[in-house]
Image 1 (cartoon, rainbow, N blue to C red):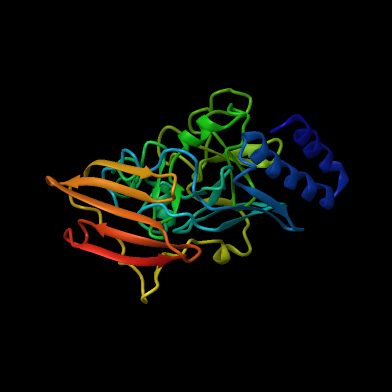
Image 2 (image 1 turned 90 degrees about the vertical axis):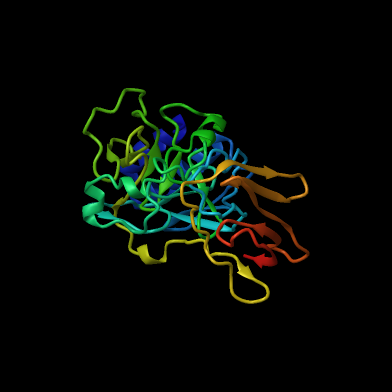
Length: 317
């Protein structure tokens, strides 16, 4: 947090709810600007929320290093992430099978699992079979493309952090939807986090914001639930899968048994993209390029899911 934002947060304790909202809005906006992502992320504030608007498509390497691919690729998606301006700590974990927050570069942040919404029992125990990091589902930057063909993080966004102009222990790397900030592996003052001090959601109390979340080297790696009150929890944003212009949509990809080899995602200046990989000695690919319609893409694919059959079609957001 910048010093002006910190001073404002202290003053808001004496200035009432309106000033508190303004300070929290400033803290969210500063976190994006100080990190250097203002060109790709827009922050707007209402009386209740700071909204981070982006296309979920980061300017760093994607998909490289994935073994257990779900045969989905990242495609830009309009995304508006609402961050509460008056967070209220409840201590009751909230989980969902979608994003729990957003990074300062506009990329959604999920919990570490890929097996759907976690139960209270799941929160208390490491879900090794659904651990996206340990099962090889994530790229070298901590993310992958999901069912909506949207890129998102499941663990610490290492490539984004390396890009941040204000990288350091006091830099906010993202915000949870309940309004609390997300920091890296250490306390904002640079001290190590005491073993066992993070709660089930990977957070702890904070003198400035009341509460904060952290990334961590070990599971759960990042926010795995929300500890704040979220009245509109069921209305939090989701990225819908692409829809075929011919009707319907593509079937979800299925991770090839045993994983793939040499997966590389190539991005070209004309907007075309290609994810190429090998499975049991055969080459497969998913290619797309912008079509003549806005937010639509011409696809050509030969995937393990579809037994290598070449398929073509136009898909839209």
